[in-house]
Length: 309
Image 1 (cartoon, rainbow, N blue to C red):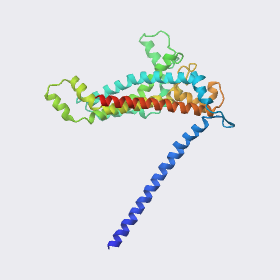
Image 2: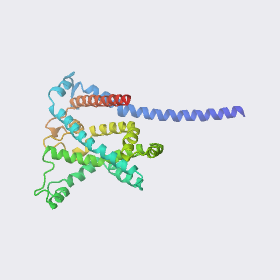
Image 3: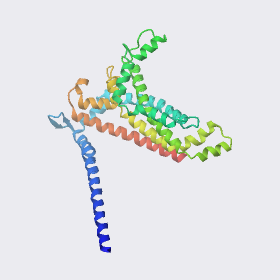
Image 4: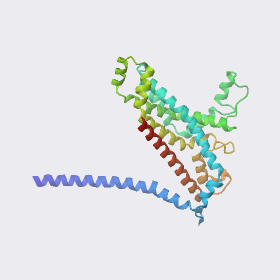
């Protein structure tokens, strides 16, 4: 009997080991095929003048060109920071306020509001861009029609003809799509705060404002750092919505970082050039370094803030 139990246990263990190996192998294979190999491909061809037909080693010439002869790339980074900074300055406080209201004792249908706010983030960014394109259309857009009816404007505003008006539309559309998921994050963080904290504060006669400042905000501090980091990275990766709304127009004034890289790789004729895979790879490497620096700086500042507190 003992040998049978050992044999059964051994067979069961071997079966589990095989399943674990299969799962690990599949994940590892995916990592190599979809992550490591593309990274090595980009690193290699960033040192080549490569256009899918011919390949010529040029050393660091592509990187020199990025820093000395590609002002549009750096303009796209600046546009990304302008859009992202404005977006986050509005979106995160708005999400926090909505989450605080939802989490209050006066709101009963909490799940309904959370689901309602989350719905825009489920919709594809391309679809959101298309919807807002028609909303702000100069000819028969809903926004111009509404502003005209209440006598705020006499002539339709050409929203996509100027840099700042076009950027405003991009910011509004991205806030509408992104604030819901951040509201859900803030709401989940607030729901995890022990109720004993608030009960003790009520016994001490603390006002709602004091409870917000001394209990709610400090308690969700670590989660706020994660939310901000995710929001920053998602903003820096913005592309689909901008492509649908403006495609970088007028005259490249609303070009953002990822859209510029996309055009270099897949649609160079839009930028008046030819296919330059090697130079596009160099841009990808520089972009990865820029995003890495931003991430490291943010983590350093977050760690220092935690130490100070």
